[in-house]
Image (cartoon, rainbow over all chains, first blue to last red; front, side, top):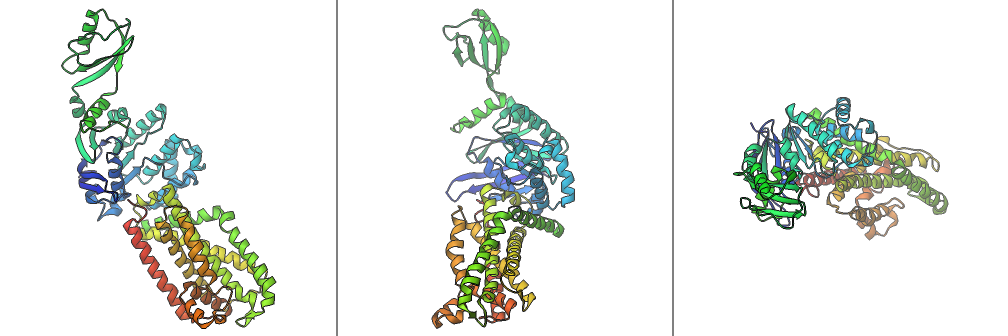
Length: 310
Length: 256
């Protein structure tokens, strides 16, 4: 049985916009799954339908085998979701927001208080439990939404841009936390624009673009399809013009002492450095221009003549 | 599963009650103060010159109507502002993503509206004791009509909030529909004073039935037959309940 099974899902808004054009998707139990796509691709619509916030036009969605149409009470009990936008009452105290959410899932207040303490402590929000939610920082609000989504111990957790606007240190803490709950058995579906995040944590991936799934594979398999990587090289020499590197197609001079080179997978970094050395150019340092998944993502979504990562 | 729904219902109802009690200066105090002014101006100052109405002192005639007006206005306002506020800030989604049937959401919000209506009604009744003697002809009728009316206007407030797309939309109905119907619903006068045409026209105003049955509970006299009044109120409740549950099930105003 799949954690999530979507078949022939269509959504056309009243404005006529076709947000989903018959997508089908399965997510294995225990998976850490990335659902990626440019802005407006249909990710949030898809998540909205799964969560019960958007009416689908047609198609089926099952959560652990339970239909969101015919068995929505069980299906929703198994699901936790962290939306992109803050959607709590900002005038309510932090602790109350979570206890109320537990109540909506039928968890009695006494038990909810114990669970709330556990998650607030784990997400470093315990000392803010009596603060009104509007007084929290952006990062704290994100963590509050994660605590709220976990309070009824869902088996499937959907996170829509959970680390948007969160500083890098906190982002890494959240990654560790999410990896930990995934190891404990919670299936996680993640949408993010930080592709480093998806590459680090997710085992399987789907890319959605213009309402269609354009790719659905394992992360390893996808990255193996990447037939070139672009590197930025910092040079000791000052260059007047772009060096002539016949084996490499895309060589761009960034400034006097740095260039950008696309290395196809049939060649190695050593080949590049040897060619530069033969021209008397010394490489002091180098780095990937973007992470590998981002490079792949841009290539795939630009094939559909979209504007790329937004 | 019923226990799960019961907990969800209690959570919504508790949250609604906490919401208006936390801000009692905005929710409880102003209507009580306004009614106190009605008692002073219309009951004491002007009322003494009016003399008797329907066989009783004007202030005794006025008192049940003013309590009922407070119940109507506050039940309606509580639900319309709370539900629209939840839509506006997005926290209605907390209930939508959870396994809460629409009927539980509906009952939770209606309970909140009824609680505020009754709270204000009790507070206004207590204030009325400063101006008139306490007398209740039939406490059960008073309680029944108060509960039914607050339920009816909580449902009406919910429907208004479901359709509302802006804060203007939640003030239009109370200002241009509810207030005129309330003022013309026999709070300040007996419809027997009206010409025959307007007496008949007044029977089309549902608030007339609530005010009169409530007055019957307090004073034992009414322009309308009690059983007819109760039947009208119950029929309105059934109609509004059906409409609001259908709208919630369709996701009108809350799901795209």
